[in-house]
Length: 430
Image (cartoon, rainbow, N blue to C red; front, side, top):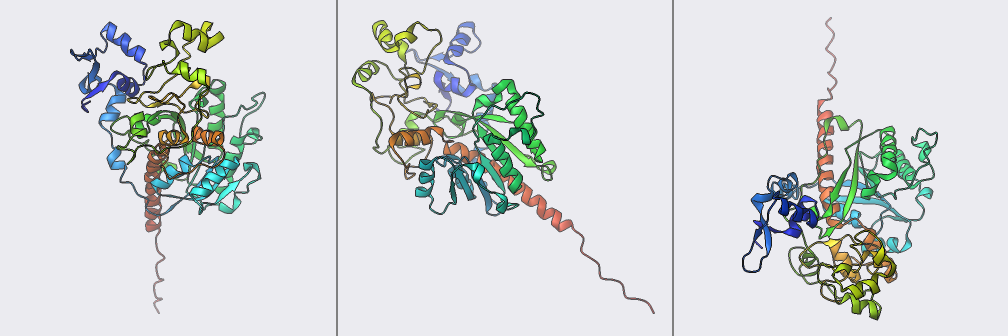
């Protein structure tokens, strides 16, 4: 399709609405697609969606300009809860040098060591790691701490009150290292966790530690060269002595939305088709049923008899359950990957073959390069990939963090230049 035209699926992704919403807009005249008279194919012209803010961001992007961003000097990165290295690899592409990565999972640690033997990987419980040796040695401290509930009863919920949670350990690392900038990533659900009190507590602690928090933002991976409908909440904090004179800018979106075909076939993202790799398999009867699901379809596309057989008691429950018996489509981004590709609630079936996605297909959808190996048994590999930050999302955020640090660096040089030099004393007059 021409870059001037967009399918219903593409417009739904761009505008952040469902296909059902677009059908409703079609029916009430709000946004009526054009139709190809030969095959009744429906599509939208660029001009039809140009007035939407989300589309304007896409059409007026600074992606190419931001792609040229390079560090003024080698910036040092410390990453906690590093997982299989999705964020760290994206940040490396942006120009950061990792000085320490901490991760509890042994298989993920082995993955990091296999691919980057030079990285300082500290395996084990973060509570046992002393960060004081890195005081003032780190430009950015990053990490995706798990979202844990706090006990709110009768507490002010400052730094000390979060003790016992993994966020406390993240905050302790910030306190012990005093980085210029902190970056935390989490699930979108953190916004509404405990009716927003959890995020409020986290924001209060970040403030208490001496950091100005940029207004948190949910970034949709599909806008950053990631062929997957994944969302991550990103928090950026700038040390208060630096914050008044600099500003962080969120990354601009890429010019188009990548699809599953971009992930698994030779093209713009990868220079070859996805290599063969091990993967899980379906039991025979499940495969026989899923064979009847079309591309982009799910359990409701089965016959009534097969729906009842596959869904069992769930057939009579409410809700769309759109992840069940779900087959992906070549011309759309993948649904968000989970830690297991064959879970009944969150099925991720290959668009043509009736099988779960392989480990390598999983990795490509997360934009890991083909030479990035994953350690451990098959289930551990799927888990590592499913939990990862997409590499290209990390890269896009990393470029903006480099730009921020470049501004801080420039600011500090200006300050040094303005320090007056001591004047030589005038000679005494006799």
